[in-house]
Length: 88
Image (cartoon, rainbow, N blue to C red; front, side, top):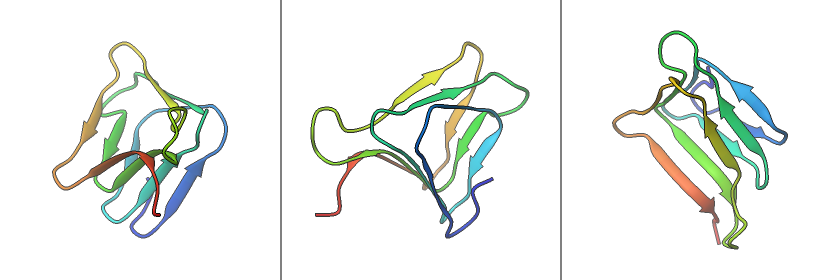
């Protein structure tokens, strides 16, 4: 669980299962990085906070999310998905 006010950045390819981003938390996937969501029991990737896929405005901004067969991804009410985010 990525807790409230915590920011976690994924900088290398990884497989996750049963991960939750809490309200107020942020998970960032670096540009060019693969995130694979495995199929386990219950919800495999549950976002209440912010999921940021990459940074910058180029066409190559963002990583790649692979969702294994049967895995579940839920963006809860009030969650935020940002692709190629830039704060400029």
